[in-house]
Length: 280
Ligand SMILES: Nc1ncnc2c1ncn2[C@@H]1O[C@H](COP(=O)(O)OP(=O)(O)OP(=O)(O)O)[C@@H](O)[C@H]1O
Ligand SMILES: [Mg+2]
Image (cartoon, rainbow, N blue to C red; front, side):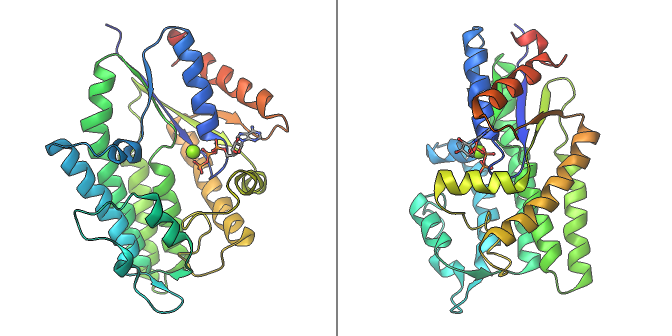
C-alpha cells in the first residue's frame, strides 16, 4: 500500500485555505485517491469516546480554558464564568457566539499558555488521529495547520505583554512551535496561501458579516474592527513567510480577482510539486 500524505494549509484568516482544501479534495477524489479533510475541532465535535478521544478533548479544552478563564469583558466579568464546567462542550457554536458578542481584555501569559496547549494538543492529535489515517494510505488534508493559531496567539501575547519577559516568552513559544510542529519531510506537504490581509478581511466580512473573537483581535482589548485585524494579520503573514522558507512550503497566491481562477491555479501548483506529483 502506498503510504498516505498529509497536505496542510497556512495563511491568514480568510486567505482561502478551506476553499482551496475543498477543491483539492475534489481533484484527488476524482483521481480515485482515498482522501479526507480532517480537523481537530471537527473530530471533537463528533463527540468521540474512548481514551484517545479523552486526551484530545482534555488538551483542546485546556487551551480554550487558559485563553478565556483569565480574560475579562469590558464590564469586568471573567470569561471563565461563561464557560460550562468540564463535561460541558466548549466547542459549541452557541458559546462561540456568546464570546464573540463581548469585548474582552486578556492576559499575555494566559494567551501564551493557550498557545502551548495548542502545540501539545496538535501533537497528540497528529499522533493519535492523523498518523493512523496516513498509515491506512489516506491522503489527509488539514484546512488549517495548527501553527496558524499558535502564531496568532503568540504574536498577540507578545504585543500586549506589559512585562518584557512575558513578551519574550511568547516569542520563544512561537519559535519552539515552528520546530515542534515542523512537517515530516517524507509525508507532510505544507502549503502557504499568500493573500493580502486587506483582501482577506474584505472576503471574511462579505462571507460571514463579522469577525470572531480571535480574528478581530478583541482579546487584546485593542479594538474589534478592520484596524485590529490588519495589524495582527500583517504580522502573522510576515511570520508565515519565514516559516514558508524554513519548511519549504508550496506557496500559492490567492489574490486574483477571480475566485475560480485562483483556486484552480492553487490546486494545480500544489499537485505540480514533486512531493504530491504521485497523487494524481
Ligand atoms: N481566491 C478567492 N477569491 C475570492 N474569494 C475567495 C477566494 N478564496 C476564498 N474566497 C472567499 O473568501 C472567504 C474565506 O475563504 P476561506 O473560508 O476559504 O478562508 P480560510 O483561509 O479558510 O479562512 P479561516 O482562516 O477563517 O478558516 C470565503 O467566502 C470564500 O468563498
Ligand atoms: Mg478555513
